[in-house]
Image (cartoon, rainbow, N blue to C red; front, side, top):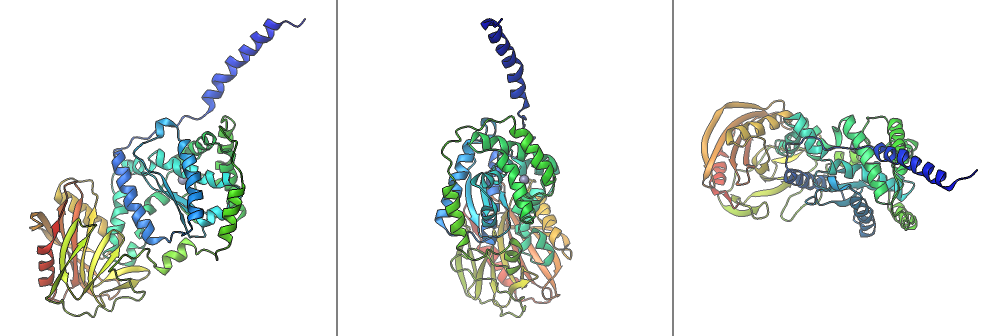
Length: 468
Ligand SMILES: [Zn+2]
């Protein structure tokens, strides 16, 4: 005989036994230990974003950008509260590149390739890739990994910027840095975490988390994308597909009403109206740099000849780093902004070799973040990082003391073989510390047997005014 109480009792029993199981089944993710501060994430991400935007052409289509931004904002609201760092500023830009990929930088900058938007079969698939990338940021994987690696993974990235000032093919691998560091190196564990948290974020933001899994099939059907970023080679796409779908069983999609696919279809149609986008590899080979600022010379495609005029003894005062530094340089030298460093060079002294900017004569300025807080240690880190990309680079002698802008500076002398000309060259590195603990440096380069530049370098060094 049917008894009401029995049914209720049975239902309660089911609820008790099933609910805690469901709650437990959603994978709990924890933050890894991290010796960097939230502010470090933001700062590193900003520097990397600047470098990324110097190297990769952004798609200049406000419709597409704002659409992607809206999807991104929606996903950010789905980040579980324990991983929401209010200081982070998430923003989303579209790179005009064909590869099916996306990457995010510490602190929130994210770059979505046009090819990824074109390949996705739905807004959900596109959102899946973005949710995965947002998860790397929210879990602070970039700096967590650098904490583990202890040494130069992050620094190497920044050194990549610094490294380009010395030019040379060896720097090639780091030329995309610092964001390359984040693209290439996440462990299997971090990738799995980003997939799982990505699925959770999707559900909380109103997307079906299985669309993240589906995107792997879409990519495979289209013959893969580009390396790095979202498309890490580990775990395998089929493992990731299975793992995400397993997680999805325990996730409830919240507020899913209202996502319509028309906007996504319109955006795809708009993108198809443009010609084929170049691949990331083509963009890097072409050596194009974006954008080129005012009074900035483009770096010519041919190698530098190394035949240059002597420095004029008339000087002009120039403000660099948004007014943070003033310096006087010979008025027959030209300013070239490259990544985060600024070069002043005579005509004939700069160009490209193997797709990398190379300089034979001139002075450059840059800022680097180091682990070491004392000047000598910081300088050594900087030299080590330069040497990573320049196998012919040698220190010659120790440090000598000097001053720059009224503060203590160290002068280090290095020798190198110029990649483009094959001539031996002398590099002087002058380092000092900024109030915020970063290292500000000047690099002066000239061939070993040319003496005429010493006076100019001394005068430039004496003219430096740091306003921090
Ligand atoms: Zn990833």
